[in-house]
Image (cartoon, rainbow, N blue to C red):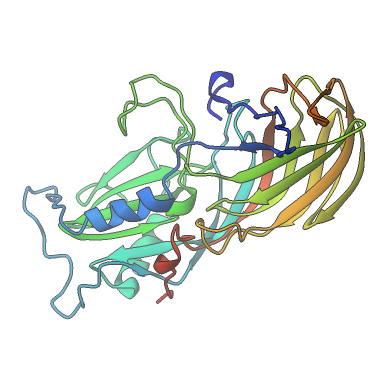
Length: 330
């Protein structure tokens, strides 16, 4: 949620069939269909080198596979850049790892590994969170005959990015690249604030049960990894008075008026399915006044609710957006 104006409303009204309230977090991120589509588009793209010519980066012995997910690369611990968007799903989230996701297009994982190991030890000149650093092959930290773009982690290290040479490409940590600074890239208006990544970190369903009782279900739908800690804020019309029970992959309680949960909601096997870890929470809240229509309770006027994810464990692989794209790492 990039700003209060962009928060999705929680469709709180209940039909006579008492359908649950749904609330899904949607934001921009370099993942899912857009990510893999971009990778395939690079097959026909040409990027000139620093000398103006297209280098022959891939030797003739390399089989021109369109896309290959590589084995994770171990390196220095990276820390996710600080997210200062107060209303962000990932505001001040703690995300770090010593593993780096990697993939190649028209290239060889073994050859890309050496380059990536060099790049992830590079301190970038522009350390601002979300800053895009271009590294030409002739520049310090660059790879000869490659044009690279890298992003800084919290310590300015090149924790994620991509390198291109003609139709050849390799990339690392694509699933956790943070691009949360004002910018005019990707079709957005210059100076507009927006958030990183971009698909869906979670889904929630809020179900009124009557007599001030509610059920909240939360699923992990993120391409980043497991959700280890989060806080859920009810619609402003509700005041949570107690958390009665929780079941699933997290333990939850009441903390400062919000529902706070700790555990490990596992990431989905595919972004196309509801296969992520989940937790179901039963709680008591006051403030909503139900009416009876056709013999069924109807609660009017509940607006948006939102959730802050405060800790995640990233997975060093791309979680596919369709089942057919599940790939073996090489």
